[in-house]
Length: 352
Ligand SMILES: [Mn+2]
Image (cartoon, rainbow, N blue to C red; front, side, top):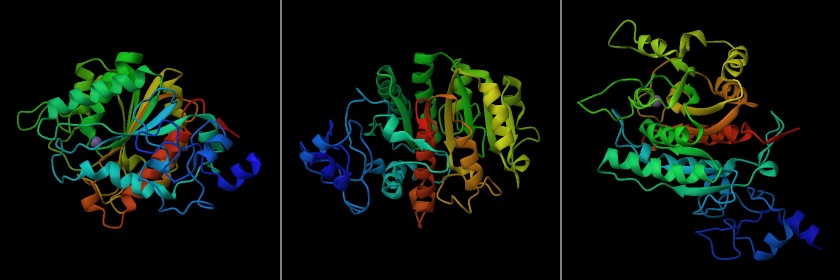
């Protein structure tokens, strides 16, 4: 009877710790009988039994909970955009990404990854930020991430502008020591300051270098392009030991060979993935703050993320989705899918 209920229900044990759910109810409105009948890990509900628009708007319709205790990985929103230099709107990114994530299913037939059979995953909701103070927002983000990673939970972050990666990496380095970084972006984000300010979305990796948060011999920046104020804008990154892969060196190529080299370079030590959606071409991802023409394709993005399988990934983010510039929702849809692919590439995910 229980087996029958489980196979027909297939909603998952959504009630586990659901801070925003009534006891016994998951995001899809599932009864407590479902929880008793199901395996011990959360998973997105099947659209065979639960209509896609049903449920609270969480990432992949996973249960929302306040505590990272007991989780192997968690989606976390950071709705901050006061570090943006041009178009604002990334504060709405996490909600929009969650909305489009309703299309995501449980397994990855392309890679054979079974993330929800391998890991306990939930949505931790959003980090509260101070909309009127960027420094204070960084403190709030750093403190929240220190608590998340202290439990062993791997955060997958829904941004938010790229400023947020700086306090996240502070928390990462506190736990793991200097980390390797796979950074996909149109921009290197290594400016020293703008308008006299040392913290905004153009400086996160400069600040990380200043504070020794990165293992600079294991930093790779992919998709870099666009006009500049100097003819050698790459010198700072290269002088730190970063590998800078320009977008034009990726055009019309598979990035599988590049990722083979990246895996060699990263080895088995901790790696953080920071994916700025503007690394992709604005034809695919127009909803972003600082678009640059002639970027990467979605299939190249998949090659990059899938190429991280087997690495010691300790955290990931997907930043700079700006819904006001994303009328079709395609940018958020792409972001939701890339976050799913990151989940599939985490260590301890079974691959068949
Ligand atoms: Mn960026």
